[in-house]
Length: 411
Image 1 (tube, rainbow, N blue to C red):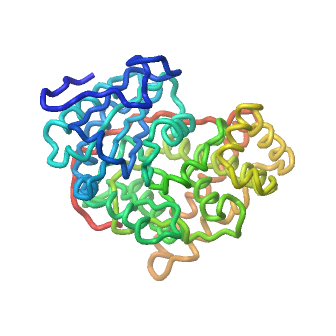
Image 2: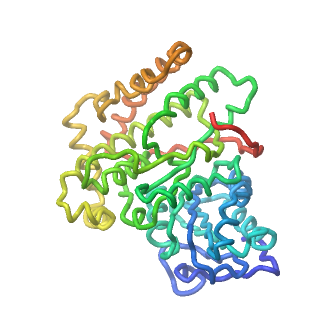
Image 3: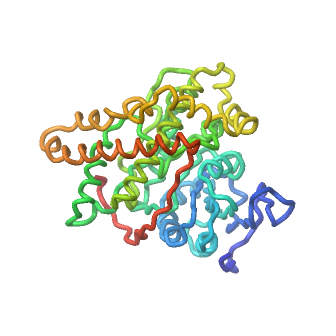
């Protein structure tokens, strides 16, 4: 744990007793760093998902606390809480985060409207960590819940403010996200692999109702009617989009109920090595398959079960932990072939390619062909993986830390 500055207070979170008070299952010591802000109502709760991110979490938090959202809410007499959700970390993620939080409550110009703490969860797992943030750790009175990865960097000071503003001005929106920008786009002379990576971004830029899984913000009542089943693979953002855009599977799909704010951006490091790209594609194919299976199942449940979706999914996990794996196994038995894991597997890249115009249709044809080949290999691997009764695939990659915090136009 970082040193506690004399000008700030360290308080035990009222619903985080851990080792600080009466025992709570699966939570370590969790002080709240605050300069008296705990008396202000929480408007925004930010949860940072971190798994062994000791090199990335420091620069990420530095860029986060440079965001204008803290000033906006402090001026309204409201508070932003920041929670680092360290799950299964065996490195210095927790201590680095606490050191950063201690500096914030001592030095930040808007510290009166900030509280921050780390939840140290012993077991790794994105889904369980997300569920605990939404349903247990976040302030019950928060209007908006924001979830982000621990290895991104904000390159604009108003990114989160713009995302929250989108929700504030349009009551139809259930969720909003920013626009991710690959850090290699800043290079004057990117490598061939990096140019291919950038080309794939160009082809996903026009997707309507896109929700970016690296950073998104949901209205609290909507978020708290969502729950991630234990065996739901990657693409949780796809599951959220489907639930939000169908009013919890009770209405036709309306992709305009979520939005990516183009003026709001962050930087991230893309996968460029063949092994990392293939593993990421395999993870995406596993995730899209499980999301397809669970959506098909939920759409056929009684209206009451869909209306109270979080309760329904929590009860399914509690009563039969393997329920989703059995649904996936039955789905694989029906479709038989790996290229039929989910609808449009063979066509989604070509659909995006067809939307390109002019010179892009020529320059982006090789990346599309390469991406299609990669999708087929990754789908074959995903099918083999799923047939073994597995769904959790989160390979950890060694990635450099983005140190430069530039201002740029989104690409």
